[in-house]
Image 1: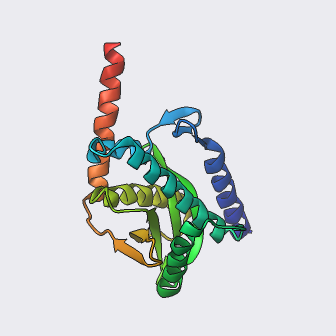
Image 2 (image 1 turned 30 degrees about the vertical axis):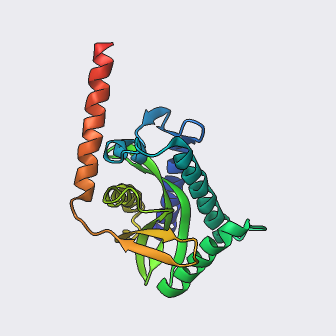
Image 3 (image 1 turned 60 degrees about the horizontal axis):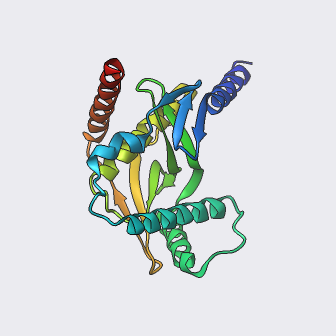
Length: 217
């Protein structure tokens, strides 16, 4: 009976998380119980400067990134019916990664929320890499540099916040996975233990600014 009650409790918790966290695609806004909360990418915005990149180049990169993410999502859900020719090598690269890392998918495009620090985001992939639970971020490029490690640390900690409440095993590792146009991939591990502390500092700064801007108005 205790095992049954525990399972039902975990199911209720998962349902509560899904219902409580809402995401608006158009504005890229997350809300927890109706209240707007910072997104991971918005918190990191001070670290990545795209001002020197022409708008047309940025927009093309954004659209390509969206297409790559959607391709992998559909593939993992066994719902990929057709594919533009330019995307086939990216998919081939992902399949190669799967085979060489023994990757087993647990979830994709998962919305996560950190109840203690009150921020949200969408992690690309969660699953096992060589039998270790890992968070993986799909990348078109590594333009953002070290900020990528901070980004994935925020996703991992939010995911583990949920897993702790569900009493599930924690995700241990974080990677960025670049799927290249030549059909190869690059899997970059991030291990800096200070990454999440940097994220929290940025989050604190963001909240401080919002508080004082509101007070001025």
